[in-house]
Length: 332
Image (cartoon, rainbow, N blue to C red; front, top):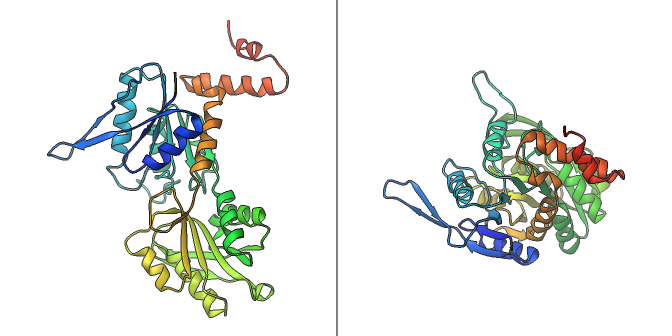
């Protein structure tokens, strides 16, 4: 029986790409609202005994995850064999510790909730800082689709004389990966955050890079204040107007226009969140990550202990031990 791809509103294009890559059937999730604003969802394809992939970015905003939860719960009630989530963008990763007394760590709480209603997760470059791996907070199998190969291909084609710059230490993994793949130099700025909307940056010695085109790379562009400050300092240092590239185009308020007004030559993003700046296609990377997730031996497990057992069996099998013997080690 073919896998079923179910697109949440706005994700029809990605769902079509995934259906083609997986040779799967696809349908759109019908989402309506009652007069009082409550969400109502409807599925039209039969789901009994099938693997179903829900496709939709988990975006900022308090109402967005509700259609996702209702869809997953409905699929369970209708007899789906397993329910997976392909989320190009995964929100609720920013608060990875309690910054003040009385706060909850929303990254862990949200991960616990999502892990309770889907069997596996694919996402693109989650915002990992104090949490180093999704497996630290999600109890389900996960796969991360890396945006760096697609970004590096875009840079190599459009800006062959690029100097890749990360605006802060958190951007280092992305900027170094992109620089390595396209064979360009890279550096990371030193940032001191003075508030939610105020930052202070320190430039390193840029003399060796004169004549190169600065390309600022970050995972999330939200308020854009860090990139605006970086643009201002690079322009003041005599460099050409920078190109800004973000994996996830969150863009709070007028951030996109503000960034251009601050001196950015271009603002480019990947198509994880729909925006006019989308110019880099990561949909094929999501499809490849989904194929890897479907091959994960832990995916069929129904409890954390069983998943750990399957993962241990897979590790032993990779070293030459018969898989059936691996799974029998904990029996009896």
